[in-house]
Length: 320
Image 1: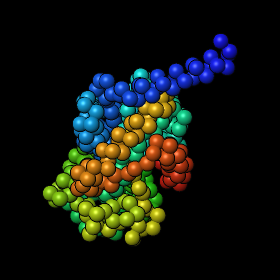
Image 2 (image 1 turned 90 degrees about the vertical axis):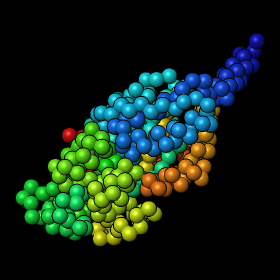
Image 3 (image 1 turned 180 degrees about the vertical axis):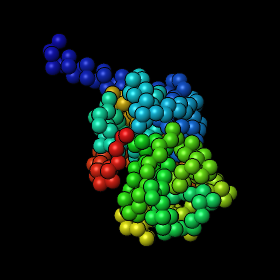
Image 4 (image 1 turned 120 degrees about the vertical axis):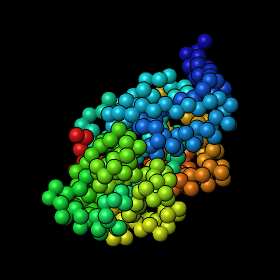
């Protein structure tokens, strides 16, 4: 057979094989690896989306929490899995920031991943314990000035969006504040409630219930616009320009995943996010769904590595 014809035949066969793989997906339970603790915003969004994907796929979507080391533990687990779409990774914007924050990563933040789809934009809200005795952000700034060592701010771990947001706020407010990383959001909230740390830029989706119950006091949202579910809560940028920070969450796969399968995953995730009940559920939790093609999400991720890299450098944040 002519080599050119043979090559074309092999290419066609390979394309058909990958198309068949996408069509037959999934053929067993799907795992979404979450590189943060159960109860974190990343975890909540993964479980919410996973429950709906279970319904349309007919196979259970399981959430696998693997926190630790800038999210590297869970990220490596996904990359080492078979790239057949049955193991995905839910990340926050901290994933893009890690490319600059970490001195060395065991993977390339852009080349080793295929973006499946963004899931949501979630505002971080500055929360304090009611016992701290402050009523607004200006009170918090004054408290920081009175303390020789400043304040303590919590995060869901080094490199998380909560960490980076805290650093942005510290710089914008011009206060002395020491970073206290926790294993995840629930652990940080426990110490806020216990008065062992002073403030936390925590995702609204993970703190809404405590704020409404009066257990936490929300001072301001960190995004550039007010939250639709807490419209009376001011944004930080209304008083402190430069304090805005938009955090996002999305699903990734290994870059070795066949393109037809990536496109199939993108379509299915976007189908779930377009459901009115899902959009409404996200909104009640302070989250807004996002929609992009897989190609658009790849470009978005690359741009976020650059944008958040600048934020990391300007804030002086480091992976301690």
